[in-house]
Length: 537
Image (cartoon, rainbow, N blue to C red; front, side):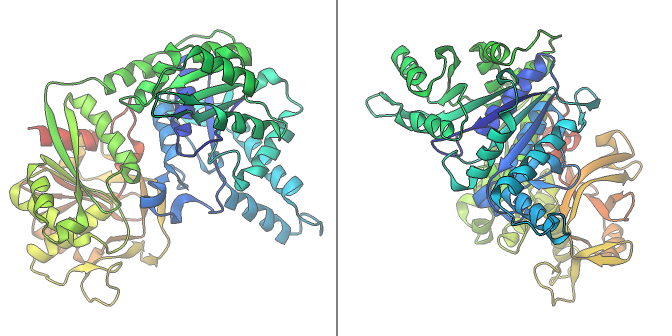
């Protein structure tokens, strides 16, 4: 087993996740089985309770684990299906240690960061190394030859200390050819086009203070590295000059693996880790090239958003659109429509709505911005404009239909108004039992024969990922169907209404699940592809 640890010491949010994903892809293309671990040093137990506007989207794994968007990048780049084991937070470490204490497993000892929390970290890492994971691209279970571990934040953060202690303890008895540290750091550029290396020097020195050595430096900077800068970094950071790489911002994150390959990163990894030649497979890298190819036609897809327009809160949707647009052969321009401004009938947002050739209503929680989303849904229904409603998007589509077609003007969700007597959306009814818990993870869905959704997927049973606690109120389903809003998919086990489609409409489909979480470069989401085709007509 070999290990690659990716950290940074200057600023966070510099691209460690994409770098880790790209290195995993490179190693897979060279014939190695890979696994990933993301370490988030924050005290939250998981990303599930963190605001998307602040932390980015909550990505849901097939086993229902709520993680941050880096796990989504790992899965998309590698085609692997990860589990709760691959996502470590300080909250989980502390919780598990305290839980063991409550069970009496420490025999009354005084608990400390080292050894107790450090040992828990090491146990988690070893667990990943021993666990087989499903490789969607190979269609089989695989066991990793190399584990890529990303340490979030920076090495100077107080929260990172126990992980650096754990790495030192873990690697002091391992041959150096079996592990290496990669530092992904921002190289400061001054207005006079001069690079300043001091922050990187401090980062390397901080790592050395824990008995750890930087083996490779990847400099995040737009300017090429002058030879004197490379030599200075090599001298001050005690790194070989041929182990210092330049990584600028590229037009697409899917260009990063090939860029690093072209700059001989794999040759560096091969030498330092003593990797042997294996059968190469360039299918993933070749597919990545098609994702950045320009096509003759461009369409505008509007996303009615409530968590801002920076994209991180809707990362998986953006990637799913990209994969399907490459499959369909059309360029996509995303138009961010502000749900709250649309609620106020803002003229600019209404123009965006009109110009978009297809509209996506993404998932979310809370009442903020929902009336704006309902305005967009009504517009699509009346004007025969393709609409894809995801999770909350489905629920609001039902509410809009109830209000404006069935004339139930007070139709709402129990989430928004618990006292209303007109809950078309209510807490989940799982086989007659109401639950306030989130329904998380992958579930099978049985599709209705001869429905539009069945023709899209080409099969009668599909498996998709979920994250919701509210659903369509079962007592209103017959009424909806009698008036043309058809339930065309139900969960296999709990009889949850999963999919609704509007009859006599170009494309008007709402789904309770999140199809974006299963979208991959080699396996685009059939639903997103069908939506883009309908918008392209």
